[in-house]
Structures are given as structure tokens and as C-alpha cells.
Image (cartoon, rainbow, N blue to C red; front, side):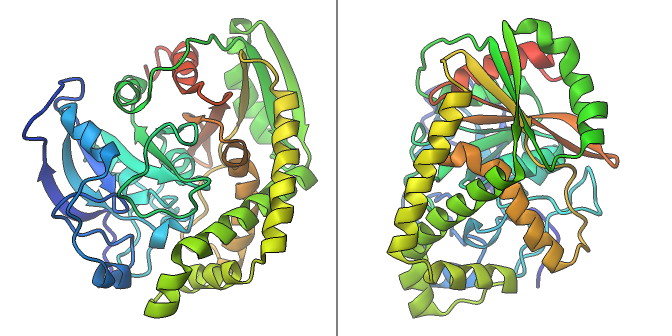
Length: 391
């Protein structure tokens, strides 16, 4: 029976040979895509669970947290095979968004996000392919980092689209997020981000920007040497969304198509529809999308030229949609949302969500997006921007 809880399996896993103490005492909720030796991995789908053996090895990202002294307290719910941004699971239930119980929690790292938001965990370990750290962080009022693609190993986890899959995490405070970064991120060159480029979507509500984002940003502008604004045309965001979805969808079918054909698993209608669409993407469409990706990346590089440049943009277009939002509306909203989330994915850039705004009494926020391998620099900048609120 589906249950409305974020915890799929309660655990108490620690490392018998702890090598460090930097995360001692911190509780981790691990998205049920990561393998933990001796613990089943369901990937949010009962047919995946039934057709895969219990792992004998632990994902290196999880192991590094354990070796640093953290304790894994739960395997957390995920959307089916991580192919959704809603956080709604037809088989296991929908985690309750404690900050806005009438709204979706955001996926696909929904369980990890809700555990952190309700203080059942200090670290929500998840993955971000198309927005699955950034979106639930926005909807649940958390900090969340999607790192530079490739800087954290993705071994021994259920992948979705390898060119975009990243390991990320969510926390309630910046100090904890930084502690995790010191364990999971490689040593990166020290860069001071002093040039700001505000990316303002054309469809973005003017009142929200004027009354919230601009109000939050204005007193912080003196921290930057230069500030400029780029309006993201709706056509550009649609272009980015379609390009990302095509490349992602083609890879998803390469990753999971054989298993879907042989198993005929039960999926929720919206997710089943996406897998059917993935199957129809041709190599020619993939190649065209690859060329479009290069164009988008070049445009971003032009806007954000220089190692000291950081972008500020809305993570989502506002608060989480309501739980009773019609499916058709959610599908359209997803296309618009992915115009925002696709930019970091297509360019392999790191993006850090800051939970600094509210919409209709529910949380949402802004993101910092930097050059590749500027993950640590984003965290350092966030500290300057957020103190003393979250640091």
C-alpha cells in the first residue's frame, strides 16, 4: 500500500573503520538510487526491486560520507527511476512537504529533501540530472547543490542519463553543506566570484521579481565589482528545455530501454508516457540536439565570460505546484521549469540553490551558477550573501 512517508527503509549504517570525524554525528538520508551493501535498491519502482539482486557494494559517494563519520539513517523515497520533478510516487506514496503540505515536495530526491526539512536527517543525499536536487530544495526551503558534472563519482547507483547525472545534497544550513562539500568535492582552485550576471526569465512574474528577488538582491549588490542583467527570452528557455529533454530522453532509453522491454514494469501514467516518448527519439534528433547544446553553451559562455563571473537566476518559477494541480497543467509546468534547470545541465556547470524567498506563504528561491569547477567558490559566495541568516 502506498504510504505518504519519505522513508522507504529505516537504517543505522556507519563505517566500522571511520577514517575521519568531519561529519561525525550527522545523519544522512540516502536517495534509493544509491547502493548500500546488503540493502535493496528499489529506484522507486517495485518491479525494479523485484528484478535486481541486493547490492554487495556501496556507492563511493555514500561510503565517503560514512568514512567521514556520518550515519545513514534511511533509504529515502525517489520518483520512479528518478524520471520526474514532482516527488509523487504512485507505488510508495508522496512525501509530505512540511513547509507547504498542500503542495508537491518536488522530485526526484523528494524523500531526502523532506527528511532534512523535518529534521529527520542533516544531509539529504540525492542525484540531480534535470533538477532533482535544485527543485526539491526550492520547494522545501533548503540549500541544495548540483555540482559540476563529473566531479563526484556516480558508481553503484541507478543512473538515468550519464551525460547529465550528478550526485548532490541538501541541508538546512550552509555550514553543514560546506562540511559535506569538504568530503565529497575535490580540491578546487580558489576563485573569488565578483562579477554578477542576473539571468531574468521573460516569463518570470514581474511582481515576484520586484517585490522579492530584487528586494533581497539590492543590499547585496555592493559586494560585486560589476552587475549586469540578461533577459532570458521565453523562446530561448523553450529551446533549452527541448534540447535538454531530447538529449536526456535518448540517453534514458539507452540506459533503461532493454530492461523496460524485457520486464514490462508498472509505471505511473505520466512516467510511462515519458518512457514511450524516449523510445521514439531518433539518432538524428539526438545529433541535432547535440548541436543545439553547443549553441546554448556558447551563449552562456558569452554571457558569463570570465572565471570571476557568477549567474543569479530563479531556481524555479515560484512555489511548488499544488498537490491537486491537474496532470495536464503539471506537464506544461514541467516543460517551463526545465527551461531553467536545463542551463546548468547542458553546460555542466555547478548550481547552488539559496532558500531566500517565499511565494503564497511557501518557500522558493534563487540560485548561483558558476563556471565548471567553481563549486567551492559558489559556497564561499553564498556565505557572504547569506550571513548571518543561514551560515
